[in-house]
Image 1: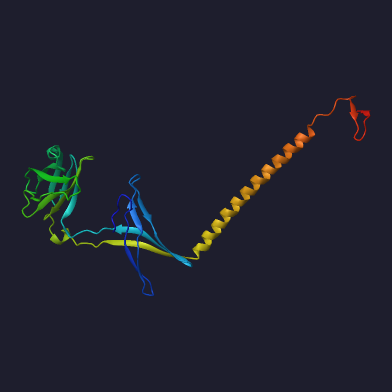
Image 2: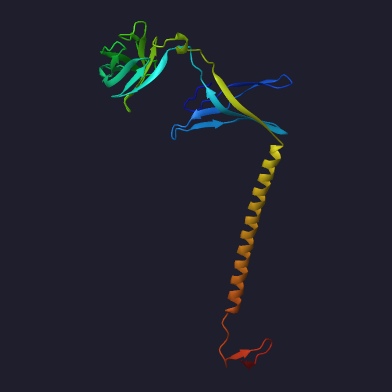
Length: 258
């Protein structure tokens, strides 16, 4: 993946090798429109005299590292039971003192109540440090009270809708059920060949040129028709001499009666 910049959209680098052994690189674009929030996909096009090759991105999976545990989403004021242990999310507390001192981090404290199977009740506070400069969040892992060998940490917070995601491990009876293997980065593309597509474009341009010429010709004919109509109107509206006025005939010095 080629990250986007201020003047370039995010693209995917694809190595293409032809049957003849020629190697090249295609860069179809796949990015999120910042104005609409929609995922945009633009194909990479390789043009030639006889055909065009289109490589269109369909789906991108950035992959994920190996993970142990399971994610539990909690909403404020609700209780979720995981393998016999209750997790109650009470509230958030955000500490912005570091930002006031010129730092670029926010400390979010998440207050929980843990209810293990033995009936006990434990109030705990989890730390989550969010870095405004794009750094990886910091969330220390702590032991789940009342469940020896089990641990938890904050994976993500969303103060706007009052929710938190916990990563818990060691609660399942079968540890293998909490293991998720790493997945590789993958990209799905659609490869299309469009033979003689240049003829279609050439025909389109011919149609556009023909339409433009027709408009120019019609405009000239309309102007000519207006000119002829105005000339005819001026000729028919010329004034006649008054009745009874003497008019001299051509080639004669004697007046004639009009």
